[in-house]
View 1 (cartoon, rainbow, N blue to C red):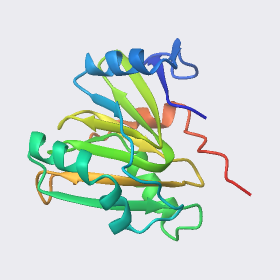
View 2: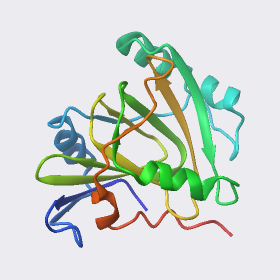
View 3: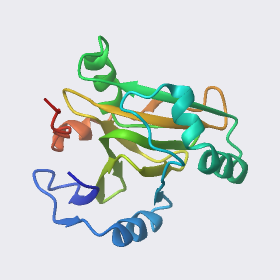
View 4: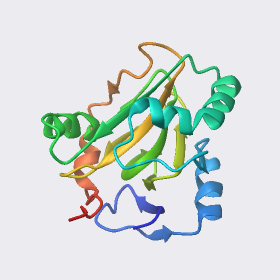
Length: 187
């Protein structure tokens, strides 16, 4: 699977009216919404399941540049696997449409997930994969799905200790759109 951007009209959630696979077009389309999207490379090869310290060391340069540029105060690594005991509850939490008082800055180190961004007339589904950085500006209406059997590791960056806390819109729109199928699991 590769990075894609699927565009839906809010009144037609069953299927996208356009799917973009070209990285430059994805970046350009998201930039028009104020969303930053770019590709990062590690300074060294990481083993599957690398420790948070190893992940942060491998991406120290890009993280430092982004931290300085945007004023992020804290950085961590989150990992979710198909056997995580809280995966069902966490998925339900992230599937509800919400906004944050802070940027939602995520860099996918491993695996994948989908961000769904809603504007008044459209929903943009960004299937982000390892190597993708996405920054949703504060107050961006969105939800996130990594599938029923999630598999990802991501670097998260924050400007405020509680800015990441979701404020739910109460709109059930997320339930009307196709769920992210997740990445195929390796045998």
